[in-house]
Image (cartoon, rainbow, N blue to C red; front, side):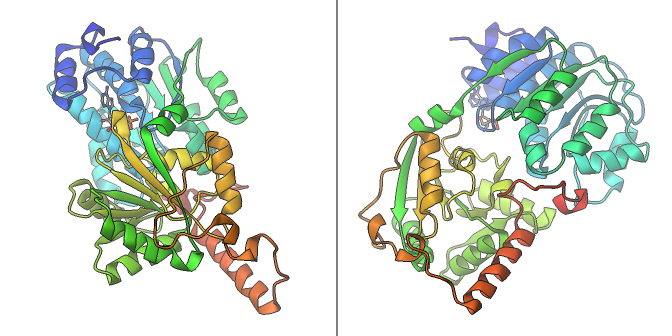
Amino acid sequence: MLEFNSLALLPSIQQAIADKGYKNPTAIQAQAIPHVLQGKDLLGIAQTGTGKTAAFSLPLINRLGMNKVKVKSNQVRSLILTPTRELASQIELNIKTYSKGLSLSSAVIFGGVGHSAQRKALSKGIDILIATPGRLLDLMSNGYIKYDQLEVFVLDEADRMLDMGFINDVKKIIKNLPPKKQTLLFSATIPKSILGLANSLLQDPVKVEVTPENLTVEKINQQLNIVARKNKPNLLKHILMKRKIRSVLVFTKTKRGANKVVEFLEKNKIHSAAIHGNKSQNARERALNSFRSGKMKVLVATDIASRGIDVDHVSHVINYDQPMEPEAYVHRIGRTARAGREGVAISFCDETEVKLLKAVERYIKLPIPVDTGQPYHIDLNKLPAAIKKKKRPSQNHKRATSRRRNENRAGNKSTRRPAKRPSRRSGKS
Ligand code: AMP
């Protein structure tokens, strides 16, 4: 097995890795770092949880640290573009840790907070800039960021950029970058348009791929709870009270659903908070910090908000609602069992979700074992007949359903791929 000390990384970086407690490089790190250190472009097919942040950060810091130059005002030596604020903050945290002692400057910029601190930071010139696309474009178009000194460009979670409607912004940003640079592109999946982007962006790249699906499925204890829709809140309460849970991420389909779960838990004296796109940056950060520090045991999230939640000790993931896309199941449960740890993933399935569950099981190529011992268990075949044989809905019911559907559409774009690019502002990058 490859060891960190066989990689040509600066001693202070080796020390930071040791301090962090990493023993061996993860698969993506072992495959990517040697090539990136040689200055090669890279196409990395990997998702969060695989250690991809260090896979690009360590060689990037090494390169900039080996060759220090004075960064001119509003210039940046490297740019890491990532889709969400949480991911951006997380990456910056990692960069600061790995680059300790090297006097490299870093800054993070994203929307939802004031401009002035970000402008001030940029005016000094930055070695490593981590940004989400919307705010970056704003600052670029006002002349606050220049790329004459750019050496390395990292495009993180390219497929998510596409899902979130940021891909045109990303392309605009890329147009402004100098042609001569090292480029690293990471994506969990490679849909056609990302392949096109990769082909135009990368020069003679090395391709490395890690497939966390199998890994995730093996390491995580997965359980399925069949439950009538109306009993979901009680089942959640039961699990939170009865099981030894250190920290749990609860996934809901919609933002409204997330808020409702939190309301229910608070009523039952279980401290929790929701994070989703309608929450302010401060509220999200407060919730995340309190969850990270262990003060708050339960964090409720929608799929998009969950990207980039890098909390080491998530012991349980609860899929309160089935994911709309089976891939999201793997992303969700990958929040537990991070980097070699074990975790438990409990999924609820009610009478309206059987199809979604089947899609998940097809995708992971495994049936999820059913927990028949939980007090709200019902036989899958005895779930209310509603979905199996759809009754013709009454006019009132139709109106209510259509209203609900519209609300969900407006309130939660996280689970569906937008047909058109939503406005940058609404994405709140
Ligand atoms: P990432 O995929 O970059 O979000 O990383 C997932 C988690 O793995 C983070 O908590 C990292 O701190 C951790 N991690 C990254 N590299 C290693 C490593 N070589 N050994 C152990 N943990 C790691």
